[in-house]
Amino acid sequence: MRSRAQYLREMGLTPWTLITDARVIARQQTDLVSSELESPGEVALSDWTSLQQQVGNCMRCSLHETRKTTVFGEGDPKADWLLVGEAPGAEEDRQGLPFVGRAGQLLNRMLFSVDLSRDEVFVANVLKCRPPDNRDPFGEEVNACESFLHRQVESIQPKIILAMGRFAAQALLRTDQAIGQLRGRVHRYPAYDIPLVVTYHPAYLLRSPQAKAKAWEDLILALAEFKSVPGSENI
Ligand code: SF4
Image (cartoon, rainbow, N blue to C red; front, side, top):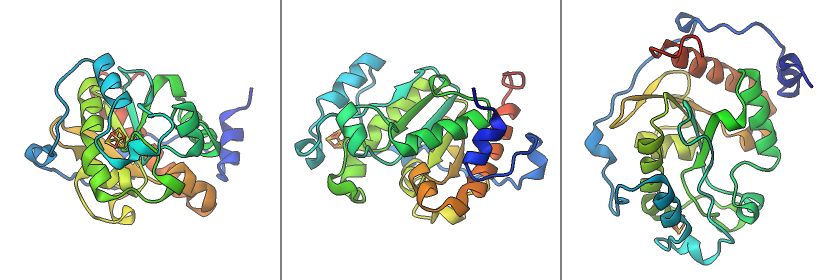
């Protein structure tokens, strides 16, 4: 089995000891009003299985016409960590699972570097269906789909959320700020006051390996915040 140091090297980073003291990382909290979460077409409160069925049968936006399958998400439905990306890609669309390609492999290595595995977290996307040709999601598609994600957050009640990429960050935080402005500080997910850290999408890191060091800083920030949650110190 490969060591954490090997995984860090694969991320293009020099291995070093984890620093979990949040004081070394600038923190700034952003408070949003819970009412900002309200959006048209709210999903009725339902149990997890019912929510999966609603997503599987959804025709709220035109993406249902081109998808092969919906991608609800994967992992522990009671996970402490919720990771959120943008939308399924071609392979995810085929398999019905999130982050299964090269970006998924990098995500696994990122998680391993902070002693986490995929089955310990829950991974989801803002959009549950693939935009054709991997184009950027349209605003109306995000508006139609995001309440599924909000209900997933409501059900999972994670202790930390990692928003991966601009679309996930903007959808979760209800902002149009650029990812560079959102990184490096701890936000709060509205309604449930859950700490949220923004980082780059693994697919972007594959294209821009020079950003991996910043992604590592984001992971350390998220880990420090998670450890500061009462009851999580020794996890
Ligand atoms: S992207 Fe979301 S809203 Fe659109 S059809 Fe798929 S599940 Fe429904």
